[in-house]
Every structure is written in structure tokens, then in C-alpha cells.
Image (cartoon, rainbow, N blue to C red; front, side, top):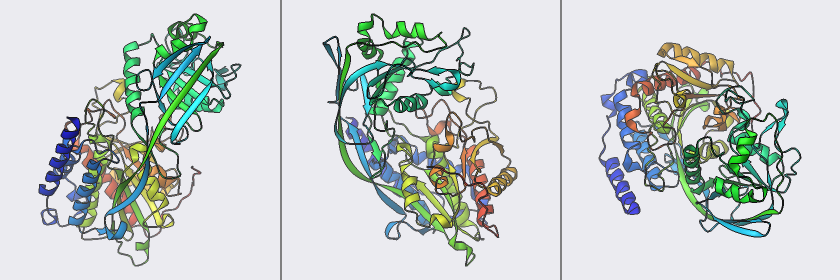
Length: 550
């Protein structure tokens, strides 16, 4: 039934694409520019791209192809130059798709007594190092408590347990003081040392050949079960990689797993303690307490299925007016993919992520196309796919640019620019969401001139810039999480606009009815003005602080 509904939905979407009739060029203000950016158009584009019929625009799904065709149709109406493959608006590239089979399993042996667990029910896993086929690991199991490495605080969960070439069990949470705050930063929020990426990095550095993460029981069991289901849904989905590159979310050359507490309890059976007992003992201790396991082994067999798919980026060019400077380009980016559907049939519409950036870029492209004046430099409008799979579309473009990276003056990227926080909203889930007249700007490190031009654009539009997410070492690592990063690592100065994270991030509740079209209009206007200033400079902006990025 789900499959049939999916096909019917796609048919409806295709009919909508054929029949929809957005405003023609003649209906726009003749001067173009900011005046042509309208909430009505933004709403129109969003109503199609983030509709249920579009099934979440997952990379590799037919709905993504329909979204790409929709964008290309709009570009053709604007008479923008196609610079994709064979003079089309599409740049197609190949991805390797890897899925862990439900036949994967794990068996645990304690004092010779063996228990078997099923993939998807008690544990889930990612393949090792992006490899395919059958991946089998067998070995001794060690317990690393919270799995925290914080040498400045004298806290090393791996000291004395001999994790190298072992299978390591790591528990969620971290030690707390009497007030319930982290001993590392004295706040109730999860410290940087207890974040999943930090624990994963510490486990890999220990030399472990596999690591099993388990939510700490007792704190909030309902939340822990929900977290397992969320992570299980994520890990059961296929991973994607560019040929020869690492796959999304891989644990390097170690096998990364996430398990329910019952699996950890089986591993701990010989100690006479449950995971809940150990958590109760450790959470108030300022130093890790090693717990040695004897005669505990595990066998893990992960079956990985490999296929190849072809997916599109969408791009168009506005040629600059200067006979020399037109060979340089300012690139705008937004990703038009999202995460599709889940096993329950829920549709992840991705209205804010990144329907908002996608629609904003459509309006920016229109603003340039309808302007009676062209900037001196060329402008490239680029919608990338595969962002949710590891920034793959922008990675591919950066390695195979239509205009050389050496000629790329700047990149302006928009990702999640359609939500705002009410002044009286004090919820933790929305604490990283900006207010109506604010905008988080990430980037500007490489070029003080680019940063200044962007600040002038913000002033003209009436937006207050918030740089609080702009630290390269921010705990959320925002700088590395969207498509501008693939330009920055090539030495191109970047700006990244976002209104921030919110309670509906990567949930089925990220829907068009929650979008502020006024906000998208303001962000698109600022992006247009900033890009125009950069493209129309007499001299190319200077990179006065180059960054070394991988």
C-alpha cells in the first residue's frame, strides 16, 4: 500500500509540475532586483516543493528528479543560461548507495553462554569505512563507561582498559555534580566532551575495532527508547558516497553500533550489575572507575548491499557585463534534497530544510534575471543534491566546477532560512533559532572585505547579523554542516545564512505552514544585495585570512 501511494503521489506531483503556472516574466516589476522578490512567489514555490506529493525529496528518489525539473523549468522561464551537462540545467553525478541488510546479527558470549541479537531490534550499525559486502568482527569486549576523553579535567575513560583492537561499550550521558550540572562546564546542557561526535572520536583514537553506544538508562527511559528508534531509523537507511570517497556517517576503520540497554546488560552479566547500576555509580564520580569484563566476547556480522545511482545538481548562469570580469563568478547555493519518508510512512517535507533556501535562491535568480542592469561579474545559481547524505552534491561540484574555482570570487549559501523564534519562546528546543529581525551568519573568516560588504547589505535590508554560531570550533560545528564548506575548503570566501535549528529539525513536522515567508523574503533580499555588491566590485575581493581545511 505504501509503495502504491508513493507512486500515485509522484504522479500527482508530475501533473502539478506540468500544470503549475507561476508568474511570467512580464508580471514582475521591470526593474527586477529586490523589488521582484515576493512572499507570494516564495509561497508558490514552497507549496510545490515541500508538498506531501513530493515525498520528502530524498536523494536517489524520483521525487528529487521532479524537484530538479521544477527548478530547471523556472530557470528556463527566466532565460538564464544552462551550463550543465550537454547544455542542460543539470549536472549529473554517480553515488554509491550502501544499505545494511536486516540479516546482520550480533552474538554475545559471557562465560561460554551465547545470546544472539537482531539488527534493527536490539542494535543497528553503520558499515566500516564505507566498505561493502560482508563485514565480520569478533573479539574481546571492554567497558569504557561514559567513553569521555577530557585530559584538561583529568578524565580519561580509556585509561587502563586496553581498548586497542577490542570491542568497546560506551554509555551515554556524563558525570554530574550535586546540582545535576556537567562536571566539565557546570551547565545542564550536554558538554562538548559528552556529545556523540566527541565520544566517537575518542573511541576511534583508542584503537578499538568496534564500538557500541548505549543510552544511559534511568535518566529518562522513554526518551532513551525514542532516541534508539530515531537513530535506528537513521542507521537503517542507506548510506551514500562518491566513488572513492568516504560514506556518510562512517566510523572510519572501526564498526560503529548503537544498542539498547538490554544488549549492554547481556555483556555485563558476569559482573552482577546492570547498566543502570553502573550509571548510578558513575554519574556522581569525578574520575572514571574502570570496570573489567572477564570472558566476554562478541561476534558481529554486518552484511552491506551496494548499488549505484545517478543524481542531479541544478545550475544556471547569468553572464556578467564586463568583458574581462565576466570570467569571474559569484556562486549562490542551496540544497534542494531532504530526507524522504520513514518506515511509518511519515513524510519529511523539509519546508525549512531546505525548501526555504531553495525558494529563496529561485527568487534571487529571478531578481538578477529581471534586473535591467547586469553586474560586472557572472553569477552562478546552484542547487545541490546529496546535502543530507554528507554534502555530496556540493562536494562533487567543487571537484568538477563548471567555472574554475580559481575564478570563483565568493559563495553565498542559504540553508534553513525560513523559521523565527517568538520573543516569548524560551524553550530549549528553539534556543538556536533567531528572532524575526536577526540572521545567523557563518563565514566571512577568509575575507574581511566580504564580511564588510555583507554587513552593508544587512543594513540596507534591515537585518541584524548574529555571529554567535560563527566560531570554527562551535560545539554544533555549524561551519562544517552545509554546502558552503566545500567552497571554503577550496579557498573560496564563503557566507552561510541560516535562521538556525528548531524543534522541527529533521522531523515530519517541518511543514510549509510553519514557514515565515516574510523572513525568507528578507534573507533573499539580503543575499541578493550582498552578492550584487561582490559581483559588481571594480576589484576582486581580497582573501586576507586563508583557512586550511580538509
